[in-house]
Image (cartoon, rainbow, N blue to C red; front, top):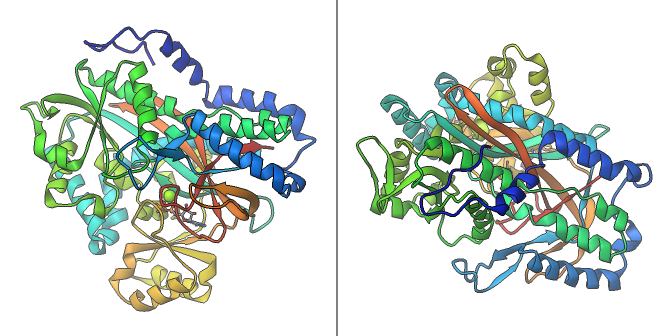
Amino acid sequence: MQTPRRRDRGLNPGPQNCEADALTSWLPRNFQIVIKTRTRVLCHRMAEGIPRELLMNTALINELVEVAKDTAVLQGFVVRIKESPNSSEEVTHAPITLFPTPVPKALFLQAIAVQTHYNTLVDKISRDPEFLQEALGSTIAVDDFTARLFKIHQQVLKRGRLQSIVLGLNRSDYMLDQEDGPSSLKQIEINTFAAASGGLASRMPDVHRHILKVAGRLEESQRIIDNNPAVGLAKAVAKAWELYGSKRAVVMFLVGENEINTLDQRIIENELWKWNIASIRKYFEDVSESGKLDEDKRLFIDYQEVAVVYFRNGYNPQNYKSEKAWEARLMMECSLAVKCPDISTHLAGTKKVQQVLAEPGVLERFFPDQPQVVDQVRATFAGLYTLDMGEEGDKTVAMALATPDRFVLKPQREGGGNNIYGQEICELLGKVKNSAKRMAYILMDKVQPVPTQNYLLRRGKPHKICNCITELGFFGAYVRQGKDMVINDCVGYLLKTKSSEHPDGGVFAGVAVLDSALLF
Ligand code: ADP
Ligand code: MG
């Protein structure tokens, strides 16, 4: 990143930028060095994480729970509460695990290494209208929401893409599969739209380090590596803003109403201010009421020019409360503003595209001369199966009905709580197996991680030890201008942990909590 431009009314970048530069050391090369130095001494002694005697020491656990909550608050590791989602007058500690979760270093590094290829892949898909048409043809025939997004994509193509700057902020989520022998990294999904928690994740390491110190586990506390996705995400947004080239223009966070994760977004907003880049927060309604395009298709909201639209809302049908919201989306997509993501990158993140990518020869289409990259990406795929009409789809139905517990049935929805498991798979497929309605879903192998024991701390809920399943997400950030990838990085990670009682559900759905990795 070059020295950030000064905004007209802004101050000099100042010392904060030095801090920001130092924090961007969360990059693969440096990162590996950090991991090596921090873990070399300890690995041979401690294969796993938190010893059982500590987990069972009730008096100490009670004390640590208080310490954890206080430390979270002191570190600004907080979220708003559902009773007053629009105000920070009352906030609570972010939902967290008491202890970090052991993660094999090799798999962690594998995910970092593959992230830049995922960035490239998503970007290439977004530039391949024929592929998107082929991949999503069956889905859009039966899924109204995806069809609506696809229509916007077509309208944009028809009018011609005006903006050659592309900004992608995504998060590729994995679980560690341990069904057959040693654990392996299996992708759950890639979120190309509104990938959340990169701000909050930046506050997590210090909280877990502190808890471990108080618990007398100094060595483990030193094995928690730095993690600051917010800096890398903001750096990419800042680059897109800079390339857009208008000092007065702002970054617009397109947000939802009554969200409790506003502070997660604020952390990124505040990082942008370190480059003296201003942001505004707007709803779809604001854009419909006061958004306009000028004759050059520059986007203005309340007469303020928007350089970057960062969508943190708009991934589910309920986010579009009226036709006006859809019109606002179309207007933003047709504008000169850089969209994060643009409509085609949004579609590249659908579960149907994920399933099609797993078909033979499809990755080769995107990496024709890079067999190693194909292998690296494919190694992270779990089994994915089509439910399109025809022989393949019929086989998928038969397989799912025979052993439903081996699979997850997924519609084209985001945000947790939408997937179907176990007996409900049979009930649903029983109804739709002979109709085109089944094409709205994909089937996926259920990843089988080994649970670990931990305490989940959530406002208003008593803490008790439980068997937990952890999901690892890696944040990708890229900026392309025309043919040049100006930035392509893995900028940090997120660990989410939930009780194994719940098959599904995210952090803001009230099921999972934030966690950090204890590498071994
Ligand atoms: P969403 O877009 O709604 O977040 P995901 O595909 O990420 O959908 O699934 C939501 C949750 O369901 C995941 O966080 C994970 O806990 C669980 N899940 C999804 N796919 C699988 C799978 N293949 N194996 C095991 N659990 C899964
Ligand atoms: Mg998800």
